[in-house]
Amino acid sequence: MKTESHDVVIIGAGAGGGACAWALATKGVKALVLDAGPRFYPEKDYNLEKSNWEQASFPKKKNSEGRYTFGDMQKLDKKWQHLSSWNAKHGVLNASDHRLGWRYHHVRGIGGSTLHFTGEAHRLNPKAMQLKSMFDVGADWPISYHELEPFYEIAEKIIGVSGPAVDRIRPRKNQHLLPPHLKSYASQQIENALNTLELNWDANSLAILSKPYNNRPACNYCGNCTRGCPRNDKGSVDITFIRQATNTGRCEVRSECTVTSLEIGEKDQISGLTYVDSEGVSNKISARNVVVACGAIETPRLLLSAKSSKAPNGIANESGLVGKNFMETTSWVSSGLHPEPLGSHRGLPSDSICWDFNSPNAIPDVIGGCRFTLGMAEVGLLGPINYAHRVVDGWGLKHKKTMRENFGRALSLGSVGESLPNENSFIDLDPNKTDEYGLPLARINTYLDEMEIKRLDFMAAKTREILNTAGVDKFFEEFGTYDTFSSTHVFGTCRMGKNIENSVVDANCRSHRWKNLFIVDASVFPSSGGGESPSLTIEAIAIKAGFYLSDLMHKKEI
Image 1 (spheres, one colour):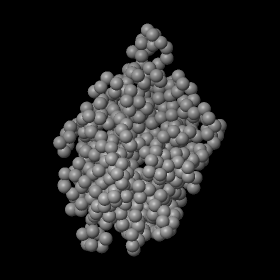
Image 2 (cartoon, helix red, strand yellow):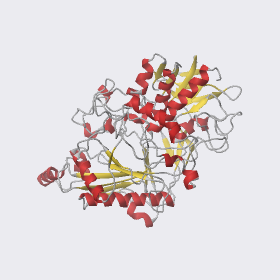
Image 3 (tube, rainbow, N blue to C red):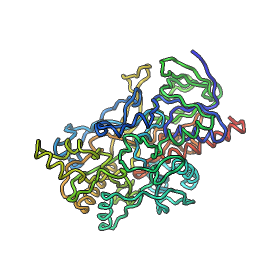
Image 4 (cartoon, rainbow, N blue to C red):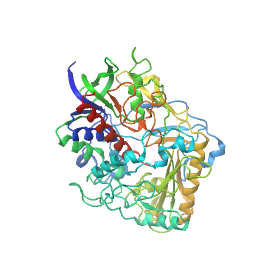
């Protein structure tokens, strides 16, 4: 086994790992980035020009998805039967009496899940960062919105975020965003409905270029962001942070390299790690500092697997909170046919957004907010094949005629809500199933309490009300997370905080005990926010941590 030595090794090349690598490289620090997934090449892998584009989702490659299992799922209550997922052609989608563990929607690879995200680039609501002190639930962030604001600005400039000049909820010190994208015709119908209901429909903040920027073209509005962007107008981490970091000559990125263990040294230091490369060869690295950025499921798995006499409960688990406080994506989407031909397959997936219920106290009798956006792209209603499978009945000439009448008329509205931690939602190690290296798989244990379900109930009712007001009087499909675990974003399993008793890392994402160990992904989030997409916040905290680490290294304090 060969051994290398590096100043900083970053495990994971998604939003956190990529942004931290950029921060270190910018400050003159060399870093090695390892990711278990492959590289994706936009010009070769995202074949949206092919005739079968609609039949393919984001491309799958070897190791581009992680493996995990589910614990026992909760029993469903007939009281909430109206929150069941269903389709007019196929009926109820979960006919069992227990919640279904479907999937965690993610990508492993250089760029992580930003490769297939719709580009939403949100700052967190400042109130969502003070849930404990303001609303006596969850936990407070150990940093304030204003402390994080300059790092948000750096991330927005690197990505090229387009959005509104003024944000009434999340103030910006400087107005530096690119112009917001124009609303599609379908989006305008939602805006008309919201005006009637005296609600707002703001331009969304998107990591999608509204004009050429940094040698990247403006968006062509194909709407297929979730299938990968072949033009590079979407600001995924691979073409923004990673590209700029490697261009400095101080960052090396290796794909298909799976870290199998962390090694413990003297004086509460991580001395290095072992990884298996793309050829199946085991390699050892001596590391001055280690940054973990594997996400809220894989990060606790790695730490909990690293048990030893010096860390009997796993590395950084002195508080017993590694894997705890797991928060998932709670969501709802309703879809119906509008009486007008909207051309709803065109335009950005979420050009606009309703933030009116985003604050933690915005929903009556519920703590934790939500947001509303268009949903056609998220549920795949962008081409005729999905209409034929899910929307239009019949066969032969009748089916063809009905398809022509209905294609482009689907109007979907989606809602994403807050997730609050509870003792029954956590990540642990599966006692029976392992990966190809003999390491136990992460096991997702998830539970929705009464507050979560009441929030989902509000989200479903409000979604239906908005679509009814927009002219949709009959739905053909609804999908929600009451009866199905289907998460795009997960949070909270290595919470940041002020002390070792109730958190895993400090405000700089540094382990309380292991002074050369940092964690820079959504696992450190004390709260999920009221529907905000987390990638921009992950990037902001990772830049902050990278700057802090580089300062310590330059001062020779670490």
